[in-house]
Length: 113
Image (cartoon, rainbow, N blue to C red; front, top):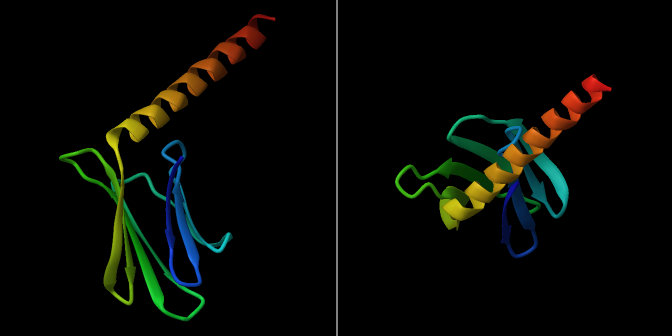
């Protein structure tokens, strides 16, 4: 799970993206306001904040550095660009691989019984 957070004056926004199942969700002050499935290298979410201002999240993987980048725009103006490094992505992929291996092993064990 990859998570990007940003605190606007009165709104805490958070984008959560699962590299396991492709589910992306955007939360404002803990309430989910957007969600979608994405299996591509980039995506975008457009929401409105409590003050009515439009906010846009762009999520993508930089091919040169392999970092996950989340750009947050408010009223079409770039507010911040948050990065998570290659190490975070590799750890998440390792956990997923181990989980799949464990699930397969348990399933095969149940078949033998």
